[in-house]
Length: 308
Image (cartoon, rainbow, N blue to C red; front, side, top):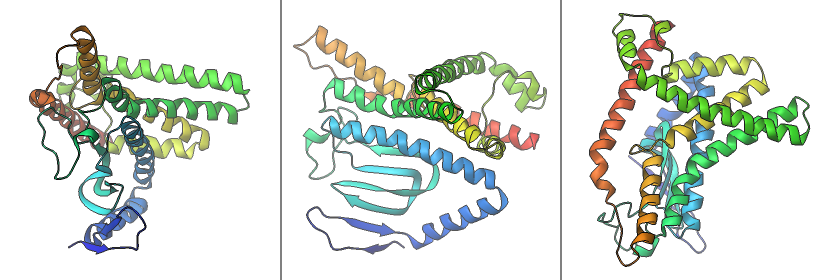
């Protein structure tokens, strides 16, 4: 059951809703996590900052490009708490490991909600606006890393000029390392399978995913080292999330950016034709990508629990 309260409004309609059941469950889960796995709570805080800044980048760029987002949520699944403002629903959902901004008209044939104007859709925006909207999320993550690394350098006593240079150098190092790690991971999938099957030790895999359990352990360790180490870890996670989202495979941001860029180039080459690629055709590949990520995540969880 969802309890709803309608506050007094001025101008635009605002609707607030909260689910006592899911809100209570979320509070209890956070309390248990804090009591029995405080490092997991720390990781959740880090991920919350990263996810909200990433999706916030998408939201602001979408609005600047003339789109009208209809949902902005941290998490997936049932709503815990939410409110509606200016036609967009903001809130928190029960599964905290993720987030999204909903844009109507992501495909040329997708249907719109009743009363939603075509002018506010993703497909009605310019190619430049679409590209900016898609890239804004990863860009915010990478910019967060630059700022974080710069701030740590300032805390250590470096001058502003030196600190900014260190911020960019460290961010570029994380970008290079993340892409290199992804390449090594997929080049050694056979060894990874052997480790999961118990035919080899984790030392035989040069690179592997860390599950939330492994990431929580790292988060707990770095927090014990102080503010500087914690901020560096936040910058590393933020940058890595941004880079991984740039991989051109659906449903990651990189695939949407590639399509928007390709459509823009094609439209310039053939200005008298309407160029629109139906991303719905890429759904099978998106399902495969999601399946691979789920398998990698679950196998990482098994390995991290095995190593406890």
